[in-house]
Image 1: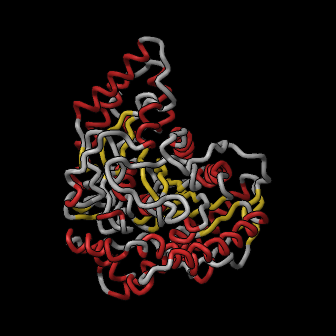
Image 2: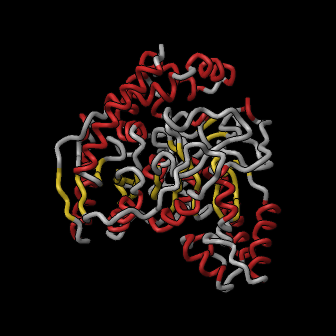
Image 3: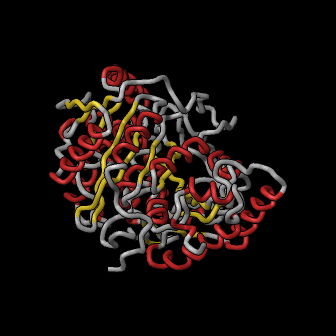
Length: 464
C-alpha cells in the first residue's frame, strides 16, 4: 500500500496492529508524502527521516513480541514547534530560541509516544505563536494547501496545513485564542480546543507563561475526521504529574439530551452571509440526525471577555514581550503587540481576574440551560494571507472577526471546529462549544454535522 498517508489515524492503527501493514511502511509513506508536498506549503520545518524510521521499527518490534503499542500504534503525527520534543529546538518561531534544545518531551508529546505514535516532524508557527497567520523569520512562510492566497490560520498553521495536505494523520496544536480551531477552519479540517485542565502541558526547555488561571493555553488535536480528533484527545489527555492544572475527569460524562442551541450573531459579531449559511446548514444536519435545535438571539457577554483575554495574553509582561519582539524584528509579532497596546497596557491582573470570575459565572449559568452551543468560528471566511499587516483598518477587522476564538478560552470551555464545505476555494465551518469537560458532547454533535459532508481531504496543494 503506497498511499497509507491518506488513511484516517483509526484505520491505519488497526491495519498496523493486525500486521496487515507495518509501522515502517506507514512511516515510509508519510515521509514520501512530506517530501512530495511540503516544499509547496512549508508546513513542517524540521524532521529527521532516520529517527522517524527508527521509531517505526520500534513499534514493529513491539508488535512482533506480542505487545500492544497503544491506540495510535505506528500512526505518524506532527508536533508544533512551540512545545518541547527531546533533541529538537523549541523555537516558537523565533531566531532568539533557535538553540533552545529540549532535553525532555513535553507531557503531550510524551503521551503521543506512550500511545505508539510516530513523531513525524515539527510544524511551523508565527513568532511567539501570536497570530492567525503563519510566518516568521527563522522558518519562513507556511501556505494554505487549498489556496496559497488564504491564511492557513495560526498559530498552529503548520499543523493545519500539514494535516490537510496529508502530512501526518493528526496534528498537535496549542490554543490561547483560536490557535487550534482557526487553522482547522482555514484549512478545511477539524480541530478541538479542550477544557482547561484536560490535557497536561509543561515545557522544560523554555520559561512558560501561566496556563491555569490566567491565559488558558491548552494543547489540542487537528485531524481530518472527528473520530480521529476523539482518539487524539484520549491519547493527549493522559495524566502527567508535571502539570499542576491537569484534572482527572472522565472523557465521557453523564448522558445529556441531544439538544443544541444555535446563536448566529453572538454579542454583535455580525458574521458574513456565508458563515450564517454554514451555521443554518449545520443545524439542519443535526436535526436530520435526531438532535433538537433551538435558536437564541444572543449569549452572555463575549466582547468584554475577548478584550480581557487579550489583556491576559498580551498585557501580562507587555513591555518585556515588546522588547523581545523588537529584538527579533518579526513584523507580524510587532504588528500584534503594537496594534493591541491601547487594549492591554497598562495591565491590572487583579481587576482582570475578578472580572473574569464574574463573566465566567454568567456563562456557566447560561451553559446549564444551553449545554451545547452552535456558533460561528469567525465572523468572516478565512482571511487573505497576512491581512492583519495590510493596514490599521484590516488589523481591526481581523480582531473583531475572531471574537469567539478569543472569548471562549477566557471561560475555560471546550470548542470544536467542524469543517462543513467550501465557498469557492475557501473552506467554511462551524464551532460547537460545550460545558466544561464535555468534549464528548461536542464530538457527538460534530460527527452528526460531519456526516452531512466535509471538504475533501487530504488534498494536493494548490500552487496558484
